[in-house]
Length: 437
Image 1 (cartoon, rainbow, N blue to C red):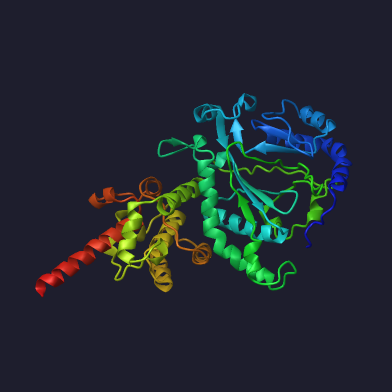
Image 2 (image 1 turned 120 degrees about the vertical axis):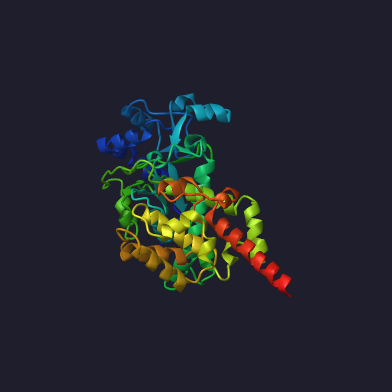
């Protein structure tokens, strides 16, 4: 599909103004936008610029009044507020936290080419499903991108005594950066494959120059509301189901033909907990400087978790929680599989040995995990860099395997346990060998 042509501004403006009143007068469109607007900061756009902030809809008729005054599109906050009209620009963080009810995670994918945006959207959705998220909202941005949403309901309301609602935009940013880091290699591979037959680029290096971008969130960050029009294209920001992304054509966003769906999925309470915890752990282990990171460098003689490889890995150096998992469990097997794959990849076990270990472990489970579930987890993991398993306590308590020993109080992650224990054992062996010489 060719990029949209560079029409003049006057033509674009005339084109969208021809349909705004007709389009926004549709009862189903008015209802969809109004329902989504509840407890959100709303900002109209008048083609040439945004309207006043803060604003909100008290009634569904409010939106159409703005249209009659020239509004062409509507944008809203990811944050959910007790009363959006009480928001004050530059207000202290404590005041914002008191007003904020929660926040949705909005992943805003943008690219020069819609086909590239499709690739990244599908990769991210696969990653979300890998983390146990079943309910994912998707919509077309109206131009060449997609918006993916995980609603506030999907997130735990507290992590380690910290209220999740107060961690905007820090925690959404960490999640987005975590997803970018875990998917970037696969994205480059997929884009490069496409460029072999694509008319967009002339060489494989160009794929890196046109990679789709994920817009990072910021305080009071706005995004185009579902079913809002887009000024550049006069297309509607239509809602899709994830399976429709690959074959989506922009003609399906024709504002005169769209059918209305809910953008917010019917999420289960807290279903994004694993994603949040894993992202926070990744941030702690890979972004913030840590003593444990230096220990890995000391052992491997190299930098980065990817390069750690423990020779003669012994099960006596596994943490108690991992030993309990390896004995077979009844509940939490999917989460346990996530732990085992990422723990053993992080300490350098060979792929064939890990597959054998998982196969033997699964025979001890009652009931066993289906191979049709295990195989895609392996495939996903080995398409990407190794990532750390979740940090200790809460995650492992949730699957009933947390049984800390004295050594556990010294570490925060099963990988650190294995590395420290192995390092100590290696040191003892060297000292014993020296004393015998």
